[in-house]
Image 1 (cartoon, helix red, strand yellow):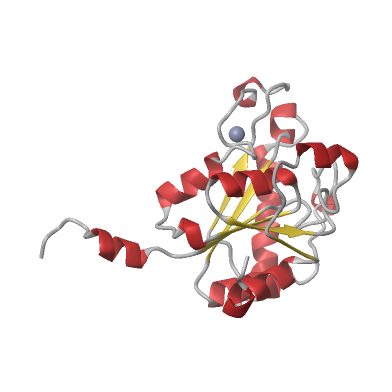
Image 2 (spheres, helix red, strand yellow):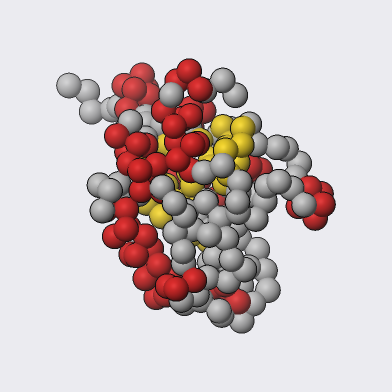
Length: 206
Ligand SMILES: [Zn+2]
């Protein structure tokens, strides 16, 4: 057997993915989420992610965490939040394949993280990294977020973009409207509704 991977073969191994924003989608949107008591998970995220797992989607979290560069949040506290999230999901037999976060910001206190990086959404660095680490069928994958920056990031990578109400972005306030270069392909009230639409092929007509 030849040891190179035939391109059709590698194509067939590609899996569809759902990239999920964290703040405002998985948890309630707040200006700052530092302590675990600020990290309030939204309803039905367990069953929503389980649906995606069961339908063989890769599930990634992609989140900007500029409080790390600002000095308000430590990597240790962030990993406690994510441990809490993953433990919560495990009660539903649901899991996230990998959490990607951007700790950067152009201005801040923690020098190591103060930079104009390539991963802060709307830049697509976190999706590109996932695509290097996993075989992903990007054109048939989704971004689910609550703000214009999620949509812009997803569109740059050719993803179908779903907006979630109740976070910081929709319906647009005049401030966020100015930043919104392209609207999401569809808007839902929760991750669960978005997940149902994703797994229901009939529903995918964006
Ligand atoms: Zn970054």
